Image (cartoon, rainbow, N blue to C red; front, side):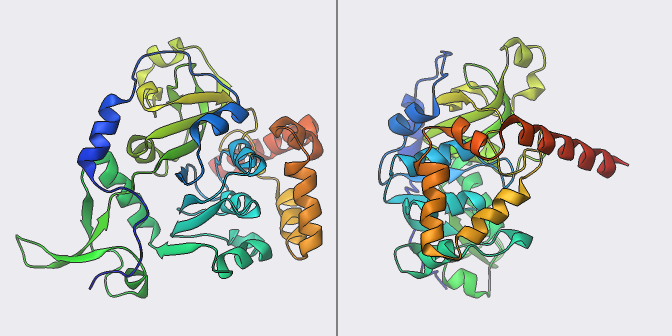
Length: 327
């Protein structure tokens, strides 16, 4: 059984290896701005993948700028994509999507206009599981064109995927071959980074190490820029090494209104406001005009949402939740 879904990205590992071989690996200052990073590194038609998980550790500032600059016809990795998907759908920025989990904001609800965008036929979709999406990135990071898995066998997800059934040459058992996923651009928000791109993610990594190694161009946003000595003195902190990274942007509270583990909790009030706005097309239009199109940068957005007072409140809440969890 072969899946009916289309594969949206290059899967030839030799062509990708040649690209990565020629990618500059000099240790140079890569600090830039959100606006310049989106302008220079994300082109119409590119396939983009987002780091983090759902509404946790997402690069909100870059996502807003993609919408603000009107990027179009992007491919999108919907690998547990909730608020990140919601933002990009608001600008109708993508027209094809590898789906593992999209649209639903877990216990918060279903964003009506985001769902309508997928149901409109404007987005071509290929289905996978979260595990399959992770393994696709793993295959790309390993430099192979596919990985054999048992995941999805016998399910409708397999039918609507791009996987192919294969026979093990050693045992004769059936597996699904899931193709490598080589995105054009990865956007990953981290806790700390230096000017060269060395990055430290605290807590659960999800698939971001594989994502950074699988992707042609990597944009890092960070809560804080730190001296390079921070990584040299403790090499274990280097979750993503500098030579994979194309640019670095310091964006405090850059995952807002999502959760940044150990830094600040998600703004459930603002996420609820966004969900409510999607109930009515005109309200939704005015909401997006206020918070994205009418702002020139992420800092203005934060001010509209309550500024430093709100951020400190969310920081205290994250601290309390972690303390209670630790007890």
